[in-house]
Length: 487
Image (cartoon, rainbow, N blue to C red; front, side, top):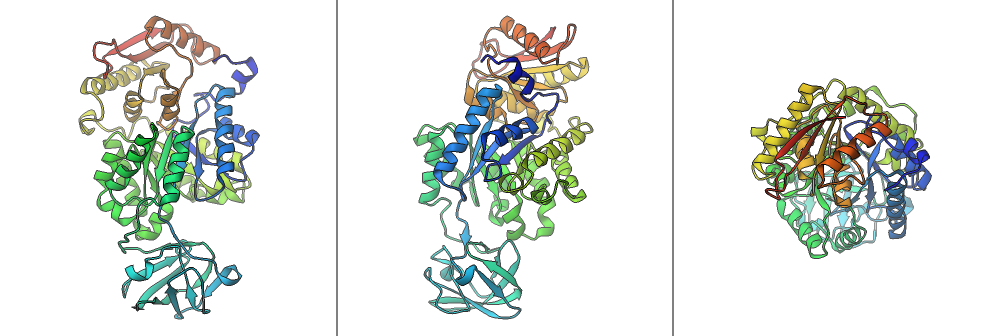
């Protein structure tokens, strides 16, 4: 793709952007194309569409805007479609809110209409059947807690143990309660098909409980010819019990700390986050940390010290990406928030330097060809030893680029591919800057392209070393060559 000098000057560069990828959620605060482009220039790599909010027309407009910015900036951008999943929510409340008084009795009743002042209804028809005496019911992100004291055919009566106000359509969590609700309802299936038709790059499934949930979504996507990567959102205690199996089946994982911090003891969340990240890195899977990372910046221009520390620790734990939700979707300062996250990441990464890279022998077999793994590991060491200015990885599917990313070399990396969908997937991989338009099979042409590209952006100069990872074509499913090129 050709670019005008003005576009080249404005587009993101690997010199200014962190290696840790930033996911920004699209919402009313950033729906305009000019604001979305500002978020890209500030450091956004992937845009998230939350299917629990907004209309299809709004989501369609967002997809079109992101793809247009991709073309204008000559910069591959990923789109993550986040399925709502089986989220249990309160029904409509008279007046919109309800005050739960200490030790008062509240009944969950069947149906969708409240008949008495102390009743609540939900969107889950089987709730009354699946609650038992002693179960904890948590409302509105742990603002209010109830305990079930009795259950009849028609209602479950609870006592308020943590008082507070709840509102219509707020969330209901049932820590420790195993529900029969399906992983996807018809709304989720329709949303997944919509995402496939728009060539979404990533589709995340909420409230994953077992590998079978992911297999169902993958089959649906396969049936409609989608190449989207499936991201498992870990936010249920049941998912932690089958974490290794879920990571094995998933294409990537999100540490969804909002509901996770309600479903399990909130004090465990930091350790569970580290456990999930370690499992993903060991199995060569990208991992995202999400929820309240810079939440205070929804209404202020500066984050708290604790939030800055949280973002830095997620990076030091070994996450590939950090996600912004309300901060960009409805916050007052979306651009400032992305710039702050990018700034925190740049400073943190300056001390990172591969600290949490898994050893080659620690990676789970079957992710990539063993020769590819050896070549990629060797290329990372060569680049470090030579103090190379750039690493280049040519990848058809993106698997080799992801493997190199997981080695965490501190040398800047660009990823090239013949497939635009592969380049957009690289937008989620730590340290990989996907580049449009590079020749893929002609090594001599690739070296000329890289030299011209690097000089044009002021990133390379004569005499700089570039390490290139490629394949000779002897075996189509592996990379078996490393070449050191001097500009």
